[in-house]
Image (cartoon, rainbow, N blue to C red; front, side, top):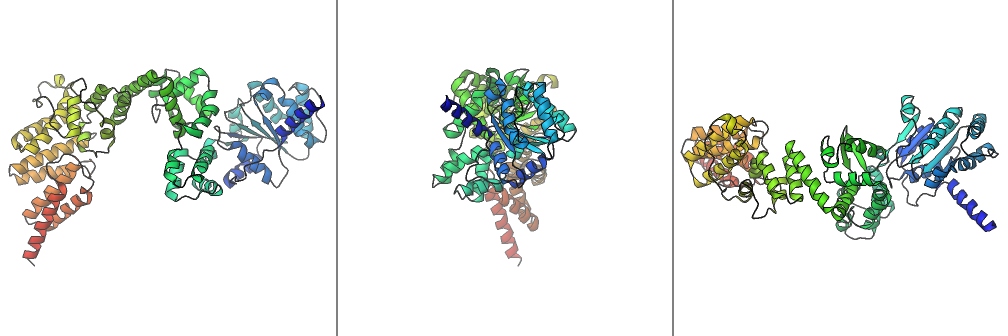
Length: 584
């Protein structure tokens, strides 16, 4: 019995001791200042996700306090559930009183009154730290709130918890009697992360350290895992690459400490909503049902690695999102396909074509992906963007045989080969054409590209005129400048092929004034042709200006232009050089 009593006493002593911080702990002065300021208030709440350094922060602060050390009490779920918290609180505060608080230590009114009386009689304030493994239940929170209000401002409570406790925090905030240190404050800043890595013997260039911060977002445990990996590796790149939520120690930690602790409904919510990078209003309901917004808001207060970036907009921590996506693929592959398709359909309806396509591709829904490109008026983007652009990357693995009439158009835009099907016909009744206008516009852009390459100037001008009527019908002149640019480039090229230089200059000039990216190949083509026309007309300064602009961006220009922009611009500069020498 004596041995058992000694074991119980030792266990209680361990709960009452301030934990020993790691030997390489980083003293974060900005948070120490917040804790110092916090004890001027009745309540300091240190609330953040698992592994965010809450206990390390407060324990390291407690050990360097120049004034009286705080009373410390580490509590687990059993302590909070069986009522032993009150006996433990009495023992934690006993050294401040010089005597024990009389039994019973059960949170009763008599106990509360006795404890409050002893606190009021003290000459100095008492700081009590409660380090809770789980959030205190409602009844415990109620008694703690009552004790704070009846202690004659002598009790200062620092509550460490992963989830927002059921205290009347709104009242504390209204009266300015709370200091809150949340996950955003607990996240390591760049200089703090550098100090932590350095203390672990890891010295990184600034760019590599930024990469580590990009993976961890300053999450304390993530940085410690990174330090361990980097300290054991000579090459930082694979070590940082191994820092992910799909496998290894980070994945195991997040699964055990966060995901596996969630009730079934919340776990399903997390898995169904992790497929998108940002959850916006309406999208969460589409993926997880009408209760999703309310549950997500609750999860942000529970600090489950979910951040509300703006009202109603949420994103998961990248490492946690990786874990969730891995678990979704392993546990519910059919649900994974379903939610990707739901996300794609919702995003396509709301104009986010690039992201919609990526979700459709993730679900192997290639027909849907191609429909999103055509109906979303994104063929112009496909024709003008870099091969490493988002649509090209998403559609790179498109199969040879995809059902539907949209796939040949998309494949043609990707490959540079002519599209299947007839050229778009002239518009007839406006109402009848509205439904088919997106597909007609896609055919128009592809026909213009192919017609310019084949030197069919008359047909190109006719098709371009039809394209502008489609733009007016769809009212997209401002929202899709790359489409306008393609039409202007095609007009200019056709006029140039027909020998109408003045008309070509007008079309190319209008092309350079669109809001499309200046590095898009049609923009560079327009500049190059303007340079050559100006040089041939003897406008040497203008030619030099256009050619220089074309060459400055030409190295980034890509796509299916009929000629190489750099070559045309260089020819223009050669003409300028010859003309300059001839008159010098």
